[in-house]
Image (cartoon, rainbow, N blue to C red; front, side):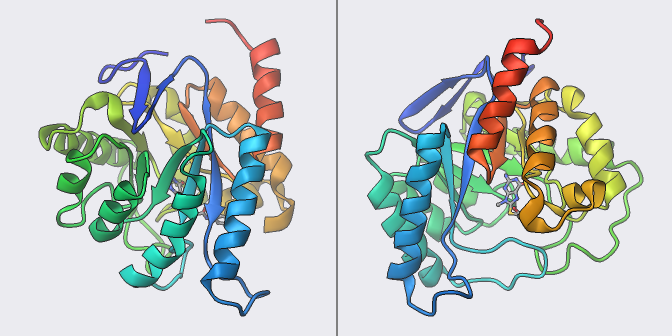
Amino acid sequence: MSFDAGASFFRCGRFRFPLDRPLVMGIVNVTPDSFSDGGRLDSSERAIEHALRLREEGADILDIGGESTRPGASPVDEQREMARVLPVLEALRDQGIALSVDTMKPVVMRAAIAAGADMINDVRALESPGALDVVAASDCGVCLMHMRGSPRTMQSEPVYDDVVVEVAAYLRARRDAAIAAGIAAERLLIDPGFGFGKTLSHNIGLFRALPWMSRLAPVLIGVSRKSMIGAITGRAVDRREVGSAAAALLAAARGAAVLRVHDVAATMDALKILEALGDRE
Ligand code: 8Y4
């Protein structure tokens, strides 16, 4: 795979990943769940344990998130988000795996970078005031994602004239803004943002356009367990592992650079099948 902008590797913090095979990003949520009424110590400990398991399963990058970006979720304040994410970063800092932080807040970005984050995963594509500068002042990698609306509002029947053209134009503009702010092209990933203000047919159009979109910059794909997988397979959220791994395999075959997944072990198996049996370019 080659990219018009950026080299055939991805630089993020302490790491430099060749992009000759898809990278696997494991999802680590640090949000208190309904089972534990304990505080953040509880949820941090669980997150760290989970992160170490994903590393054992073969993840290249861990994406640590302290604010739920699920449809309808309400915002979390900066202090609470940092209190969730920073202890997890500190605990994983020397585990030999790249650490991404899923945040749209510049204050959280700065603290996360100081605590050892290698990458910022921003569903607002560094549009928050000050975000470009915070990342530019570091050596972090960054993922620039497209979202229509906000996490709270994005499910209300989005309309696009041509979803692929509009999403690509946005991602190109954010890529160019990042480069203009001083972030080197080889530190950038783009992401069409599956499910973020898109219907199933929008998601399908974007998925099919993956080889073309990859010409702008290396593409990160996040479809793991999402409603599009549920809509296609008819499965509830806790039974979408196979559908998610199949989608990850297809995304990889279409040139995705990074796969953001919950089920790292299943994804690794799917990628081994692609490597052994897939077409040679
Ligand atoms: C079940 C499980 C149902 C998960 C919905 C979800 C992306 C992302 C998210 C993505 C990038 C999610 C933070 C939404 N999705 N970041 N983040 N790309 N770059 N929902 O697609 O996983 S959270």
